Image (cartoon, helix red, strand yellow):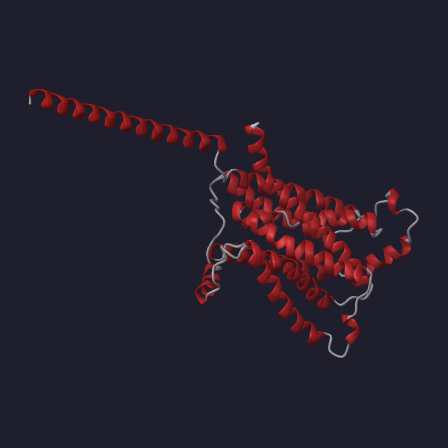
Length: 339
């Protein structure tokens, strides 16, 4: 029973980060549909963070009220300075470190492969009867080079965000409050950008009971609110690299969901890229597993030994005290008898 419990405890970060990628994949799929309907990406960012702030802030106020540290100027400077420090253990001479480096390169290569390489279109049962010609023309209108550059830029920005979040949690170790602050600041900064970018276009701010509203609520609650909080918990236990290693997995999930729900045509290049991503992810996780202690059972044994030793020492101390008391009583009695 204890073994099953410890195995589940070790598997929780993996399950959480995979579910997180499913959440992000759902956001990408819904957002794609909302943007196709004409929603402004700048307004979406504002609504997304506003919804997340409204949902997360009450929980942060209630549950973190006793443990929340003050947001001081020194914490801000720590964030800036600590961003220059190394956060991942890499020893190029060790095989598991080589596996992490190679796995990262392979994973990024798989993502680029899914973006740049099309290949033969797959005739899948759930896409039959759909307007194949319209889908094919949509594929030809895509700019793979520009898309790949934007994906690379987005990956760098997202990695920087996760690193900064990990560093901030060391000085401000309250996940709910940090999530609320991130979303609140995102609302303010996004509003300033959206007002400039959508000036003279007030209709961009209107939403109804459609995919625009669903995209704002889903991305705000699941991805900004719950997502930032959960990945903060994961990073505290496994580190930021563990979280970012799973990010390309969302591309695979999006390709599958897009094929089912948006009737997007899958190509051989995307399938090959997905296989490459999974292979690279396996290498990274194998390398990360070698960074962990051999097993939790050894820690439990060590703790049990320490506890047993402390108990024995306490028992011996009590025995010695009792002997001293007995000796003192004997001396007192012998003195009384002599008198």
